[in-house]
Image (tube, rainbow, N blue to C red; front, side):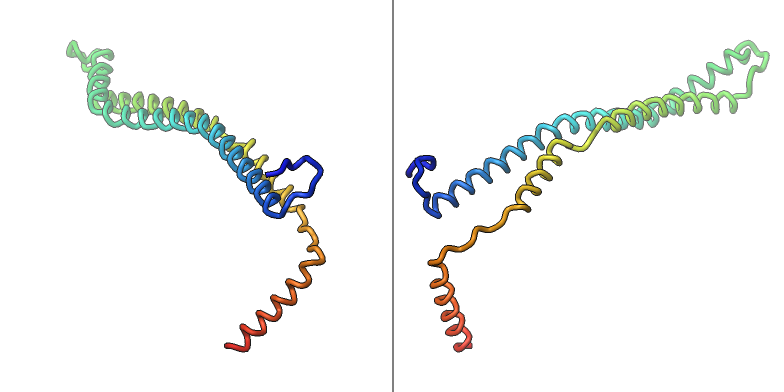
Length: 165
């Protein structure tokens, strides 16, 4: 192939090959940029999802054991262990449930804060918009004079095709 910068005109095939290679490189670069941006946000989102699942697991598995332990602990703390009565066990169980709910809310807030840090890939979006803007302003080149003869040939072929139908 000849050097495209030697001053000689390039053939149509060379121009198409060059445009195709440049467009392919542009698409590959934009895909690489999108991957790099998304990879970091996926990691943040994954951490947030894991913390949310942990919050649910803590709520489900700790409620039975923690509720009993806290309820009897509150009853004992209020004097129920020495026969003075203390708080009613129902109030002690309700208080232990509220403690579990507070823990769940705290873990949920931490998970929500991690999810809020996930952002769209702004650089990739801007680059894609810029590429679309450039491509939308491209105008086709006018056909050379030799193409007029080709148009007449195409018209004759269309006439032949219509007459055979």
